[in-house]
Image (cartoon, rainbow, N blue to C red; front, side):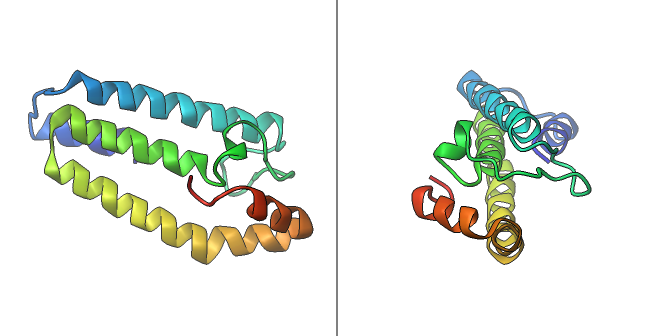
Length: 132
């Protein structure tokens, strides 16, 4: 989603790289994403895979600032690709992905986390914003 679609899009459409700054965003988003994956494994004792989610609520690292830093990181990556290729289509794709993330978080993930982690989740949501 964050790499295959934009890279394939750029390659198939033969889009030239127009702004190296966009690649800085791609790198920063990727580093944030990898940091979160590490925290899921080390602190949460789980993975990104739905069949092996974190056993413990992850509240360290970037999760101290956002309840959904992985989604934020993917959004930064997608915005980076759109900027790098100055592509309105990729920007629209990024927007659609962000809307899908928001709906998934509000309708599925947060209710599930509330059931699974109870009071710890409620306390966490009072301290940390959903996105920023």
